[in-house]
Length: 220
Image 1 (tube, helix red, strand yellow):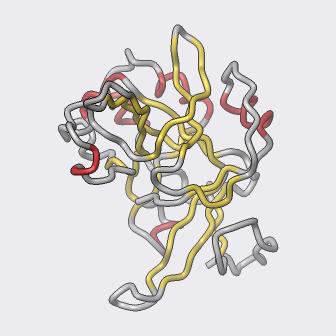
Image 2 (image 1 turned 90 degrees about the vertical axis):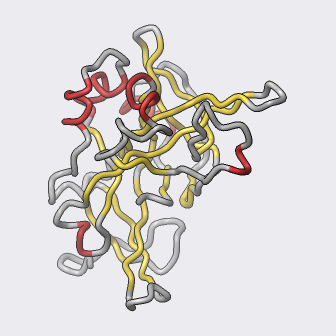
């Protein structure tokens, strides 16, 4: 799963990479958590747009959000079949704006001791995490824009610490992912692990501003 991520790049760098029209200003965020407002990119009238949504997907059929589990991830292997996600994956796909995410490696069998890792591109380019979104309406008529991150099996690099990773898309795939008319088979093909050398894992002591660059050969 993907339960924490970071967005620390300058706002203009994010806008240029993701290609949305808005010019939002936002501070660096090193520890984005479930239920936090998150930056996402959507497609409307043929143009990409920046939006803030709640990280924690609520399907439209839910009557009371407090009685429904928090859905922060959706498994790519079953997302088209799950009742909670199948409508959103067909018509409401988005991109989470990020530049790193975190995973924890279990250090004992019971998982009581864990080592956190910060994961990012060697080039420091942004990460486009594939997502789905849903506008949920409460009984009192108020609306909440909600979203979840798609996950897939970990590549060989990340499998050293976890068996799952977020689906991360390259810019060439943004339009196909965001367009609501993309065929289901084409969407499925996009939900794959990144190449084994596409990400760097850095052992860290805490979630926060990046520490010193990892020494070569000492990433894990």
